[in-house]
Image 1 (cartoon, rainbow, N blue to C red):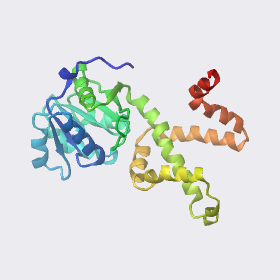
Image 2: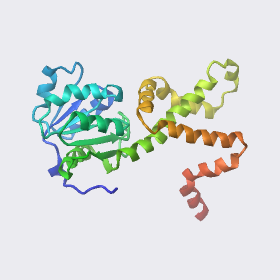
Image 3: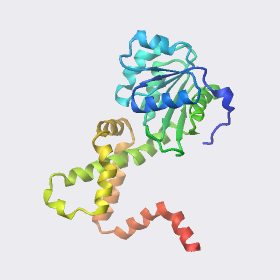
Image 4: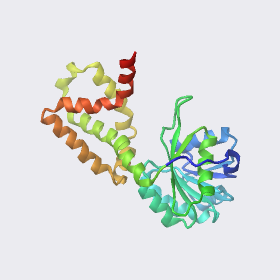
Length: 268
């Protein structure tokens, strides 16, 4: 689905409220929005009426930046304070469940978004954001959500909740689960320590934050994604091929990721 054209100035929200503004992603978006000159208000725990009412007042975009595990409870607190024409949006890494929850809790327009980058993007990095239209969201409503992220220097593209979750089950979910299973398998085997190689150390370093600081977050996202278990079943099929000795077949399939590099090398 191609990006819908929109004029940047016309699509900027007059005011955006960021709920979960002290979390890592919420704080990052709040800071970038302030630098971009957008009018933003932050709200975080405790989400009392005294905090939410002034933050939500006159907002035409509400961006919910909380984990999936507390998402529905947060909606119940926020929605009573939103103007009736405000666009309700989220940034969770799953979309089918949050979209249903938002549309059940909010009679107004809904848009799902997922910034496909972390709270500390590298300077000059590509900052893609998936945008999922809600059932009743018009182009004008979607332009507010897209305009917010475009003003922050992000690249927006539209998709569906199902396509998004199927992709994230494979990209994000399987990255977590395969690392989790691998390091759980080897845990406690101190006799292996003299044999560690640089490639193992690189994998361990890459997985450290995911499996320590962010383990609960990724575990929650895995369980919230309806396509996670199908992705695991497909991965098991690849392991069955390895167990059967079909390593060359797996190598050939895996080389798909470097096909352009190989084509370039062949023409040089």
